[in-house]
Length: 373
Ligand SMILES: Cc1cc2nc3c(=O)[nH]c(=O)nc-3n(C[C@H](O)[C@H](O)[C@H](O)COP(=O)(O)OP(=O)(O)OC[C@H]3O[C@@H](n4cnc5c(N)ncnc54)[C@H](O)[C@@H]3O)c2cc1C
Image 1: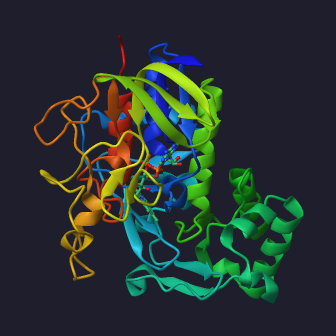
Image 2: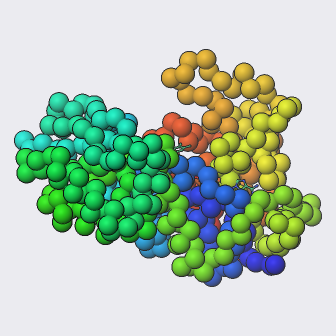
Image 3: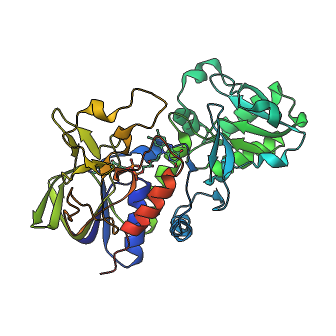
């Protein structure tokens, strides 16, 4: 197979890069071995200001069929499944209640396993309880419940059970865990609102995050809509002539291209790996850095801060690039001239200490895909 651009990784950054390269008329293919951190995310977009963000985000919204709401100017408060309020710029419509509009009314918040206790609940007039699910359902994971609720009969049963247990007239809105379906969640939410007679919102995802899975699926259908094929498989090797990558091999097939984009994430997604002797970037064997120090041979203990609450250097390790996102070595020299890197695989991007995570994926993916030649 021969294409213009190969993108490795189908998380948020890889999909952004693929959509951007395709917008220049390039023939693009995405190779991915599975789902990475994007599928685990809460579904909220944490960003920090960047002049490129609005146009990059508009490209994303053009192809991704989720209703994403928010603003570049101010962060919004979102209630998460753990009871924390999380600040983020954008999220899917179903999470988006402006708490300032509630006034003196109460909001009913229902958990599945235990009542969610939002902090600070007292300021926001929140009442917490449990969703009246059947006892055996409580052991099911949120994605299983969400899949079940894709069926209208199940939605009616749930809504009826809530209506029977609670006097909903005294509430301004209802928050449910994010379990309102996968495929049809906008319709299902509306159906719930009709039966219950009040606005229904979903909390952000926790572990086994349904909103994260919805986002990942929507990214993949965006690729399909843009006619960008996805090859399911692990890039196992590559060939190069001097500083130019010629091809990558996946499922024993060689894929030749003019440009390659690395969007493989960090340790969780398999983009980085700690072997017995050294840290590795798993596709092209690139040098890895913490700040400006090469760390491939650094003992792991030197990259871990014993204080749990502190930033961990380990999670900031990654590929260092020049201003064009082309990976460089410890002398600042380009490693492969037709390779770019984007997203969490970059050094300095810490996926566990957010603040701007999705913003970084969106902007660096967009820039990596700017291939005009
Ligand atoms: C648990 C968790 C929750 C998070 N929640 C949030 C949140 O709520 N908001 C927020 O803004 N950020 C959040 N983040 C951070 C953010 O989700 C991630 O940093 C971001 O989604 C990563 O996107 P990515 O495109 O860089 O990589 P990923 O989404 O991790 O994608 C990497 C891709 O590369 C592929 N890959 C790797 N190696 C190979 C190979 N050899 N061959 C082929 N394919 C390969 C993987 O299969 C995968 O498709 C969270 C992170 C984690 C871990």
